[in-house]
Image 1 (cartoon, rainbow, N blue to C red):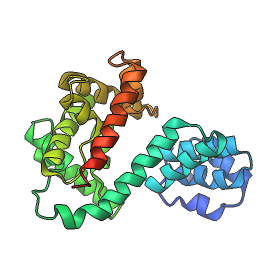
Image 2 (image 1 turned 90 degrees about the vertical axis):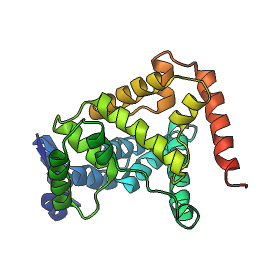
Image 3 (image 1 turned 180 degrees about the vertical axis):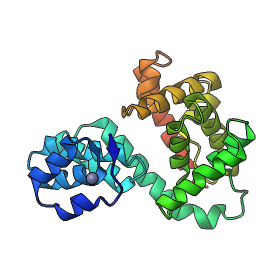
Image 4 (image 1 turned 120 degrees about the horizontal axis):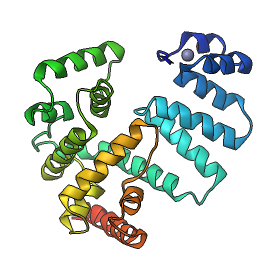
Length: 249
Ligand SMILES: [Zn+2]
């Protein structure tokens, strides 16, 4: 399988030509742009959703694409709770990244995932620098999440190591208040699950994500029999409430 660069020059030249784009994909190209172009050419909303889903899996850090995919899901099923929730999360995070700068300005900066992985001995500083350098060649913006994914893809870390580092990062973030406490952390702090369970769920989430399967934390907690669906819903509601009260002070 061949991963196409973004932008893909072939697709750029054949944007409107469905047959060429289909052929490009059938040849085995892992091409975000081809799926995106196809999503604009198909008329059936389900096909559109499928195209956007595939594009989004190939570019997991592309938030605009994720939003387009989630909106396409809602266009098919307006009651799609997963899509609604994810869209809400994204909107909230965007709201916060606008708001947080002036308020949280003087707090210590939580560490990046790469630095945490080095500090727990999961990778060496040299390995981190190598991956960072590779990232900088590919794009101007090095996203923190992408580093974790790259390290996974290269087999330098295991999903469980990444989960551990993510938990540490979440703890540092909630301590530094640069970001809201995340749901997983909330669940541990309020005794819904143990830290070990959170780590297991995150590990599973990362493992499945690598296979292109996306599950929310709540869905996995139910699937792995750690919480019932009712408990997840109750906890999510409480978390939401607690999350917003911190802005009322
Ligand atoms: Zn391509």
